[in-house]
Length: 182
Image 1 (tube, rainbow, N blue to C red):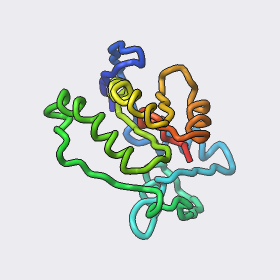
Image 2 (cartoon, one colour):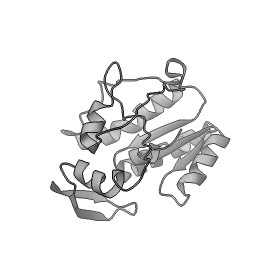
Image 3 (cartoon, rainbow, N blue to C red):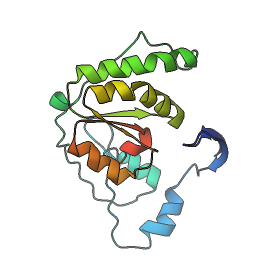
Image 4 (cartoon, helix red, strand yellow):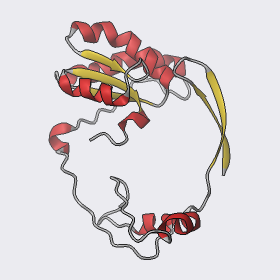
């Protein structure tokens, strides 16, 4: 499958990239990985699907003929550490992107204030939205005593996480930042 992907760099420059991905990666993985080594360990929070958890979908997509599988429950305390907030009052970002961008900082601030004084990740699908929202909230959050950390403002991922863990912080990042963070 081939597609064009438009985006914006951290410095605000428009980009356009031709991307490609095979429809069926199983044969390539089998030839280049699974048939070449004795043991491959795959770990992810999303390898098993359904109830009860099953690896059938992952096996079929990756071309795995034989595999031992184990599903281990998450140590994450969802009832205590997660809040789901749905804001039906926000403008639709597809049909009213400007209205959504204008309303987003207040919605983020409301969520942050309702979550208490702990740290928070605020994740975005684009750097431009991240930068606008972080800029709109920086002064207010700093007055509240929260450290504001923004992906793309000079610190590496490891440094951002270290500072995030050290003090009450709000870390603004793009969705890919979250991958691999425990």
